[in-house]
Amino acid sequence: MPRIQPWTYPLSPEFDRVAYLPGRQLHALEYQVQMIDSEGNPYWKTEDVSTVVPDTSVKEFLEQMRDCYEKHSCTKAAMS
Image (cartoon, rainbow, N blue to C red):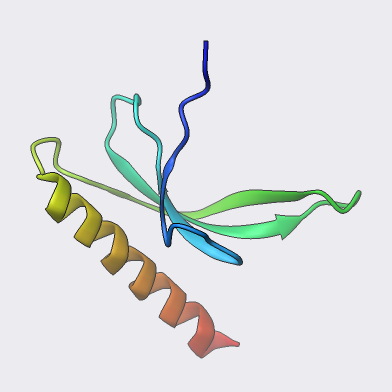
């Protein structure tokens, strides 16, 4: 069975992203940052989760992904 790939914003994330994992009962957006483990392997760590109303249109859903990314990514840049 093929693994379901998450929807991400931006489409080609480098350091951080917002991810939605289709197939879960809870419609949630996860703000994730890329981390490196002790062996040098990259992985995605969830730092914040927000829920989405199930009957949201695809256009509104994608706008919420963008807004979530901009909110958290700007906060992260301001703290650096």
